[in-house]
Length: 498
Image (tube, rainbow, N blue to C red):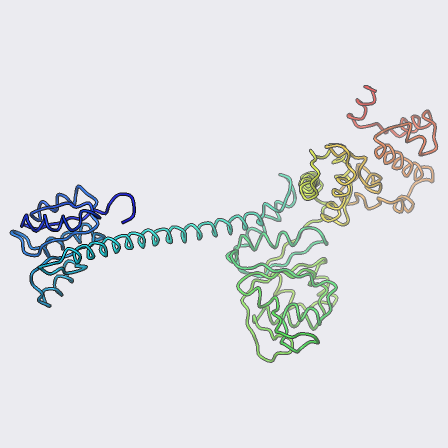
């Protein structure tokens, strides 16, 4: 036997010499307990961890089968062996059924026979314990794996949910998100209307991961700029040989997104033929792969987005009215970034720290002056333009806090103090030139922007600004006083300290 504690065997027989003989045969490899009656054996069972029982069948008061039947109910894992002088088959079958007897040992037994039976029984007991332990571990691991999978799914859903739609406390996006949350749990088509780069894809993904289909795939495709042939292959899939070089079947997004969500951006660019094909999918859930004749079905939730008002295209006859109504069961208008001035600071900081982490360049944030210029600009490219600007600022930054001198010149020159409706619409000089007023007023408007942009870019170093603009320091100071242009508080304090 292996080193360590010896297996415990309980020997029960009403004859002392039989107990002594069994003990002598087993005591080298087993820890032997002995009892002369069923009651004494029961007490030893309660006080010890017994792996194997050898019990004589014929004992006064209670037979071996009766005793082992009771043991089976209380300690089912203990291996039970009967020692008997009778070999009647019917008795053996009855004993097996009643007490779950592992083996019969007939009298007279040989010491080697008894030892072999004890070894096998102890091995069986250990196998049974290992099996139970492994079964328990498997149940635990399966439960843990399922729990971890659900936690990962939950984290994925939370990481791609509406918290990804960054906004300020009083943002106009709050109403949009509230509306999207309402639609998310209803399995209906959704149409998102908004300019390019306003975050429609993020909003659609958030709706999917808070819907009843959140554990199924989310697929997206921008239809703008794709030909009908490419769109058909991407959406419907294609059979082998249907296209040159296609050696195997191509699975389309309608099939991949089955039971999940498909988000199609730029549906306003679809041709009449593709509009008709999409209408069939929306209304019937049916489509045919390119080069195939059989009709396939899909159960997907379709979300679409348009850069322009589809109702206007319907009125112009450029978009099918039946498709528009099929897509716009739920319609959400996503505002441009110029209408979300209060969100710019939140978005800019988040984009900065994301870019800093991606490029390994630690920063502490953006200065208040830089945020003021960023908030003042109208962002025709919306979120992507802001992200690009923040990345450029990070690349050229020398300090941990990014100042306005890093901002692009056209943003620094954007007009200040205007309403959101026309903010930045004339960030170049074109609108000033076309506006009313005298020549002097229009020239002064342009001159004021140039002065502010130059000073900001040069960190309000008036000597450098005057040299770049071809002015004397006195002349520059006179112009600043005339237009009421003053440095930010932080720059003014630095100049006083200098």
